[in-house]
Length: 301
Image (cartoon, rainbow, N blue to C red; front, side, top):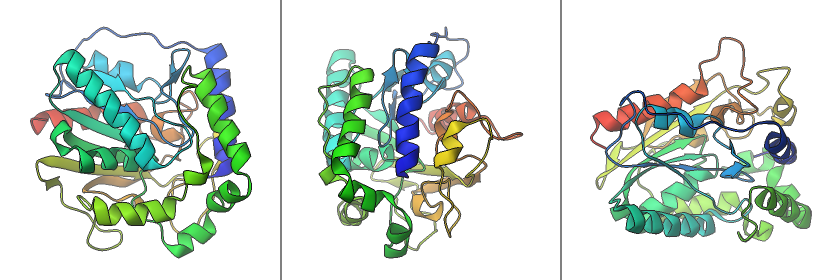
């Protein structure tokens, strides 16, 4: 999670609000018609939508078009995963009460991954599956030293908090608390490994258990960094010593069954932004989410 990426993506979110509107799609197939609804969970400095433009660009409509019931979470842009997880849990309880839903399939990008794992750990009765896209599960000392986000948050916490507040405001969720001082991802991931070990690999870069206590765990990530010269978000992607998507180390994003950890996408491509600008010949990120819904459907989830 690179700071420059953060600021650029916040700006892109604002531009998106002025230049595009998503269109709801009518259901045409049952390919993605999971038993339990899907919940999409955004990452650090992300948003539910900005004036109809989704963080998961075009993904909710594609899922609904293929028969899925979809909720999109709105959690703090800048805060600890545990705080975000509590916010997500409260929304899930509200949806369950209003719509008679028993369980949910959580799909989280970036910090949306540990946010989803938190809910699976504290309220497993509400979770059918957890799928993470570039959701970090571990951060070694070497990885923490290589990434500049920890130092920047520590040195410029007020600026990071302002960025989170700005994104919250333009997305209509200015009530969400922002707390840059709570962002210590390395410490939090180590804590989650003790508290919520389900799906974690026994060895670095391995695969974890696919099914734990009735909850399916899946993960995927990319290994692209600079993928499209026309995509402004490429400027924010960081080259690292280990293969990564420009923000999260591929091996450090393994959880449960690893669908694939070498998609030719960078961290922003993974949720189909900016406006679907991906590398030439790269697979469609939207189709990943639709295919994952089908995989969950076939598992009775």
